[in-house]
Amino acid sequence: MLEIAEFGHILAPQRYDAQLPKLRARLLAAHFALRARKFPVIVIVSGADGAGKGELVQRLNEWLDPRGVETHAFWEPSDEERERPEYWRFWRAMPGRGRIGIFFGSWYSTPIIRRVFGKIKAGKFDAALDRIAGFEKMLTDDGALLVKLWLHLPKKQQKKRLKKLEADGRIAPGDWKHFKLYEEFTAVSDRALRRTDHASAPWHVIEATDRRYREITAAEILTTAIQKKLDDTAPQPAVTTAIRPAASVTKKLKGDRSASILAHVDLTQKLPEAEYSRQLAAQQTKLSKLAWAAHDAGRSMVLMFEGWDAAGKGSAIRRVTQAIDPRLYQVVGVAAPTDEERAQHYLWRFWRRLPRAGHTTIFDRSWYGRVLVERVEGFAVPADWGRAYAEINDFEEQLADHGTVLCKFWVHLSPAEQLRRFRERQHVAYKQYKITDEDWRNREKWPDYQRAVDEMVSRCSTEFAPWTLIAGNDKKFARVQILKTIVQRLDAAL
Image (cartoon, rainbow, N blue to C red):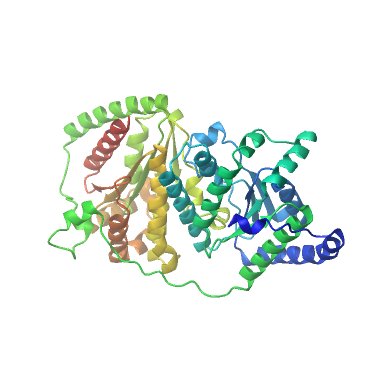
């Protein structure tokens, strides 16, 4: 793809001055219209060293309304960023709906550089590019406009530009080192562009030899892309996907494919009080020691709790936190998204709360709300929740690849036991705050939620992030089973 940007394009000063005022007016008009349409615009500015990427970013900031644009420069990751999965730093920089985010450097930089210097082989490089393509599709499927600009320089022009930058004292560390590998960078970059050039997120290669041509071309591409997105009113196609149970689930349902997955949870399991006290203390002691061992090893952990209303998630979480030093964990209670969170992709609010190395984040409710409450209550259309299974699996795989210990719990109970607990909450003064009209409405939709849970477990119980179904009719049994699972998973990881 890069060979198309070596034709020697030059824009005369007179033509630049004549085109710029009208182009700036069109760009600003599109930017202002964007605010009402509420989709985010992500502009990636990448390319050759010395190609004027920084100058272009400055120019775009000059031409756009500063109240609606954010610029993020990605260079070497900070210590804080290295302690979390690779994409964490990109997620927290995502612009909200109606805003423009300019990314100077992006998720392409690291795999390209690592491949050029031989730190990863071709197969792993292609896998990284495939993950990028999937990530970008997830963003565009959610409505984002992704404008990818690659500034290219022929070798002679790059050498000339680097000499000028060096004379001006503005050359970046490593530029000359990269120049010596010009052919390698060109070949690797070209492969990256071709493998991630898709209709929903195409690459725009710009010849960057001439500043005026570079700026006008980039501004025209951005303006046209925003205007096209504004004009595009076609509805999103429905997503139809086949349901295939995970291997472990398939084994459970052998001989009875129509049965609910939850029906196979033995709710008769109980734990006597004396045995409960003994096992609870033993497991909490183990978890306390392992939590400090994980801290010393820099190993993070994510615990995620879902389940029926009144299933005992809160009391189970308290037994977990009793065993962990308060300096090592945070509990995130997930409620309806705020205005700020609604302006982002639904996974954004979970990415930004991921723990640093050696720490634990406990989610009371989670990203599975997309395929549970949002699905059942109609807050998300089928196209949105239908593709969420693959998006969630990719998110969890990234956590696992980073080394994060992920435990996912569904706390199950019978409708009869739930009714008993609801009535108890109504009649016990200090528990009345726990029961709401919404709880009763959710109970009426039990069959719908059960179907949603079955599909969630079958499609998102993976080798790297298996679901653990907890029998919750007896709270004591449930608490110990949860603690045992955490202890086993953390001990195995360490």
